[in-house]
Image (cartoon, rainbow, N blue to C red):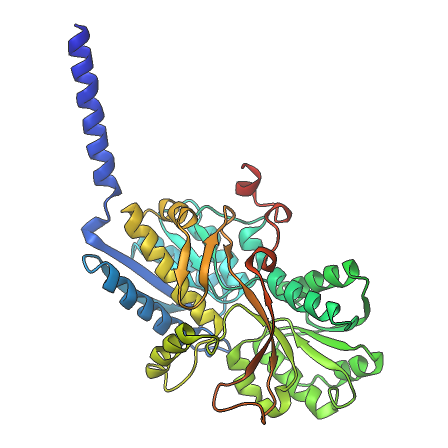
Amino acid sequence: MNRMKVLLLAGTAIALATLNTAQAEIPNKSIKVGVLTDLSGFAADSTGPGSVVAAKLAIEDFKAEKPGLNVELIQADHQNKADIGAALAKRWVEVDKVDVILDVPFSSVALAVQEVVRGTKTAFVASGPGTSLLTGEKCSPNTVHWTYDTWALAHGTALALLRAKKDTWFFLTADYAFGHALEKDAVDVIKAENGKVLGTVRHPTGTSDFSSFLLQAQSSKAKIVALANAVGDTVNSVKQASEFGLQAGGQELAALLMQLSDVNAIGLKDAKGLYLTEGFYWDTNEGTRKFADRFAAQTSGRRPTANQAGVYAGTLHYLRAAAAADTTDGQAVVVKMKELPSKDPLFGDGKVRIDGRHIHNMYLFQVKTPEESKGPWDFYKLIETIPAAEAFRPIEQGNCAMAMKK
């Protein structure tokens, strides 16, 4: 009888193991990825079609490593609207059976998508949005946040400039949650380093005339005028700051969120001298330059932004983790993404923390003068490398429930 029990138990264990293995296998050896982005709005230059190209390049490199797996790519335009983004994500999860949603610029859209994806079999690898809530209070076992967040941008720029004795600040802030978050994160650093905030003005999004705000910044005599805004608002405020002669008067500009595409839109004549923090620059080393050449070949010569680089790196790491786990179950793949170190030619060596935050070096850059630039898209000079261990918010400060359980 005992021998029979042993045989039955052994048979059951083998059957369960076989079942689990079958369940873990990638169905039909195929993975479906979806780039949900801004294909037609004011972030289309920094994300959009370029993010789709970046995902395609990641798939190309992955298939060279794993030729036995097929990867299907789809794309959609969320039009920078949270309700449209959430509806598209819901369809992708429930109908189209997309295995991972990529990019998703704009924090409000990303937070809505995260809630749709939470608890499903779809992963979310966000490279476009900035809100640090994605890996903070709103963290999810389905989500990995690549590239940057408000804490990293504001903290990196503010701390480096404060240490360079640029200790009086004036804020020009977009009057919505993202702008407020950038400002708060920078102000926290300024106070901790005994700097002074001499004033703050807040503007609505889509502002065309910044003259009254810039006059207040100018009259404050602050050493740093910090722009806590994004995309078109940043472009317009930088151009008008140049017209008002802020830099000529001895003040300096710090953009708390700026992309390579924004500098291109402004031009070096007006953007020169501006400070910004990024997680990637195409002209950093041989690996980034080779990728930029491949990207440019498909984008009429444009160079990749940090957001687009994040799509490439996040997609590649997701695909490698799915192959290693032999599953497309979103939460299981995210677990594997956290177990495996990441490595790619754009961000180098990195890792995904338990809260979903990808950790890598960040960089403080200053925009070159026209005389310093050697050609198209040669915009940045490196001021300081912010080590990965210091670049992002300490995990204990994020209030992520998953991190607090550990």
